Length: 101
Image (cartoon, rainbow, N blue to C red; front, side, top):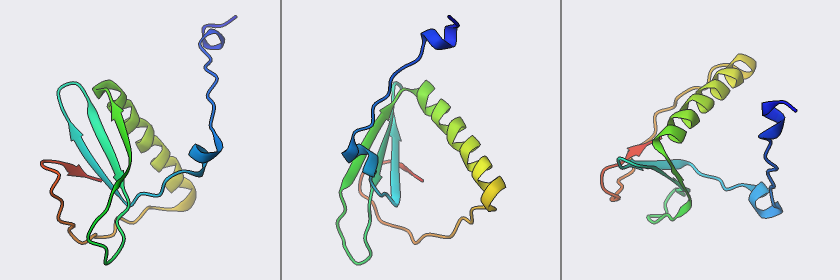
């Protein structure tokens, strides 16, 4: 048996999780030991929004995620053309220091 076969993980996806959650704002914070990604849905004309999902990653996994996302965007653009980065209006956030994506 190969090493790859020995390390297979059975990943289950329940029906509710498979539906996914729409997000049009990601708020990213980090400490020395973790990265926290909060996914939010902002609706036009609604002054309040809730975090719909939070993902906590180690710095190593955050870097792997960045690389995997970059590779997937590259493959998507080869097939579908360049993703245009449209200018978004500034959204005032009072979550403290944070990066946006």
